[in-house]
Length: 207
Ligand SMILES: [Zn+2]
Image 1 (tube, rainbow, N blue to C red):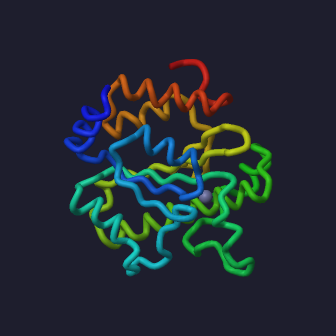
Image 2: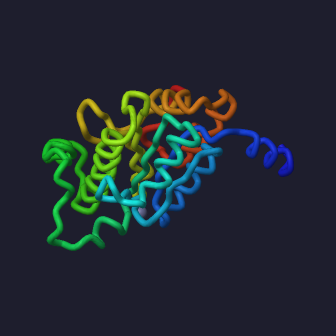
């Protein structure tokens, strides 16, 4: 497709989802580009405000109320600087259950401390967003998704609301996510191939 056509195509298309990404992650930028058009909320760590009445929620409010978006995708990554920049004494947000990303999942997947911190960081953003949505909008209409990229191992994990932790993502799960974002089958295939290039372990086979 020529650039001009692509630009016209994009401007005619309504964004499909709101995505939060980290400013320092090239993978997040690449993934957001693949999902384009999306409404992007980007800062260091993809951090959402800690308080529900913070004006920093403006982008999220706009995406839901003005753009009518119903899918929200939060992204995190293992080499994120944001969690370690938080004061060593500050606690994880009180609403994160102690079981989330707890010792079981750590032992099973052999996560180191930095990895766990970055997953807990993303978990905290999920709970911040949930609590904001509970207070402000009719929650059942909105679907939350979260993806965590392991920068060192080239693997991708998806948040499970059932187990309240991140689990290795497979092709089918990514496909379901892309379906929810109303992606054409041609585009879905393109996204999957790109992710397969990135992820050698979990997104191989069955596509
Ligand atoms: Zn980051």
